[in-house]
Image (cartoon, rainbow, N blue to C red; front, side, top):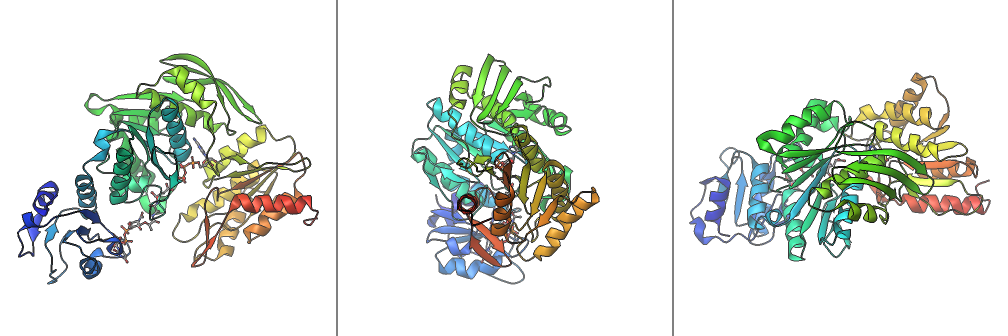
Length: 502
Ligand SMILES: CC(=O)N[C@H]1[C@@H](OP(=O)(O)OP(=O)(O)OC[C@H]2O[C@@H](n3ccc(=O)[nH]c3=O)[C@H](O)[C@@H]2O)O[C@H](CO)[C@@H](O)[C@@H]1O[C@H](C)C(=O)N[C@@H](C)C(=O)N[C@H](CCC(=O)O)C(=O)O
Ligand SMILES: Nc1ncnc2c1ncn2[C@@H]1O[C@H](COP(=O)(O)OP(=O)(O)OP(=O)(O)O)[C@@H](O)[C@H]1O
């Protein structure tokens, strides 16, 4: 497209230019100066840490043909056309969407938001769509997939990357033949306009509990940010068990005559309902009642909350026209999600070791409660809490939940960043002591903490390693070290078998 079209698409005011915009060809857009390629437009965002205007020279050196922003500071001028807009983030998304040719308009897009269960529900929806023969892409915390199913990573580690990557990935999906896309949409993405420009056919809501309040400020704001998905989706899928948010979402989902489907894993009145839930060591069994009829479901996943995730995915995919029998048949072959309730291979005499990604008090509560059901002996949990700017109010509740639901808790590191690790451990201990419990130890080094729990656990016990799940790095101070929780756990089991841990 040429710059004149972009000015029009953004409804921008063109300042600081000698060149006529119709002669300038725009081939891409980026908010990150270091990623600019010749022909790109640089969008200068005033963020919490930097003012993107400080990187204009770098962007121009790399070949930026124009700059978009909310106004040049002071008397600064720039040597390329400057497009003044009311919101740089909105303009970033609008420009990226226009340059990429609005790819989401040509696919069926399912968005998934919520505090817990987004990745699992997204992967379930992907599996259901593909099993129904729909060529489908995925954009999620675990990375993105084109219809070929190979997992790829965007250039920055986000659940939902910035708008230019989102639009680029959607276009790649389309180019590779995708008819549908599942887009995990974090609250940050919804708040920061990263997914503005994605036209959602279906918006799936998992649940809302207190997380990321460092960013959103209040629960009301967090709700309002997430609710944008429901306000924008053609059809919403809402969790009837998620009080008080469900009642607040219904009017937002039905604005302008749009429809919604509800689901309940806890026996409430809803369109999709689960009953007769059985938790077995190898997975879940339940009956589903739905507008499409009744069926028996077998899901090879542990964790009772996965009943809710499965209902959400089924209702979302059914809204795109897939039948109940196809959905139920596909669920039985779901391969699971790495690092989420992942059970390690075990040998006789080993405890059962489960690697899980629960890192909020409510999700840890649910994870431990559900694992308890299929644990014959004692339940152990190894858990930390993140440092840095991440929500410090999580720490004490995590300590409380861990010691209330497990027989033994081991408090340890989890990306403590520049926060002194001991301060985090103290907070977790405080949460446990405040509730009158002392069934914990603190072992700062996570490798040691895992080995301790695996050594002490008996063959009938279960050890849950919570919080790191599939993450590939650990942030210690300002150092980023490689991390592989599954490998750590396997090594601890090997050492236990060899008697080295005794
Ligand atoms: C709160 C939040 O999400 N902030 C994001 C936001 O920051 P910001 O608006 O304050 O921007 P900034 O860092 O001050 O930079 C301003 C501008 O200068 C540019 N810049 C900056 C430095 C430079 O050298 N060159 C340059 O061009 C930046 O690209 C940006 O356009 O925009 C930045 C640029 O993309 C992001 O790096 C930053 O993510 C931070 C680091 C982050 O950690 N975000 C996490 C919390 C996040 O988004 N998480 C959610 C998932 C949450 C969950 O559900 O678990 C996610 O979707 O991943
Ligand atoms: N529906 C649910 N309700 C509560 N907890 C859940 C639910 N689904 C999954 N969990 C727990 O949350 C953990 C993370 O699951 P998942 O990755 O699917 O969520 P997420 O919302 O994508 O989280 P994140 O954005 O942090 O990756 C799981 O390992 C499990 O312990």
